[in-house]
Length: 261
Image (spheres, rainbow, N blue to C red):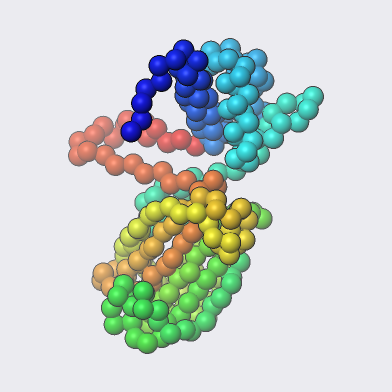
């Protein structure tokens, strides 16, 4: 059971921790949105004035962001954002809507294919692909944005869709691969969680073992509601963010979206 601090020193320390956490969140958001011209983060003095924070709070917040790999402090020059975050609409990631031209599903990512072979259908996959049969096509790859990996995905496709995909070049993203194979995504669903990267996953994603990764299991359906692909996906939580928005019926259509980036 947590007890409230009673000593003045404990109270001050707690307030400083809370102030540091809040400032770190604000600065992280600014970095993700590209709010700083040319990536230059304001100086300590500027941050103190803008956020009414003590120097200790500012320094600790910057130190935490540096540990996260979001900024780099160069002696005598300043502090710069070095973090690149991919933000995509969650509905776009389902593959059922046209991709935003600047989004991750618009031909800008590149796959590093690990495996593309016909394998026995895993027992964990079979229940999600009813009638799949004893064999399926496994397509496993690391998704890269530029030269940086951001996700590793293992897809299992049932036949006859597997036949259509097997002979098609995999050049950008998985939905483009399906489209080039003549397959249409009627619906898809995600089960999203989080875990700590094991040594093998960490190596593929270029993160330390134990780093937080978003984990997903996905089912892709055709237009008739028949599931034909099941995937296990691990995504760098520090490089990939989903934007989700829902509206109550009758909500003003002209209302601003509040989209972050």
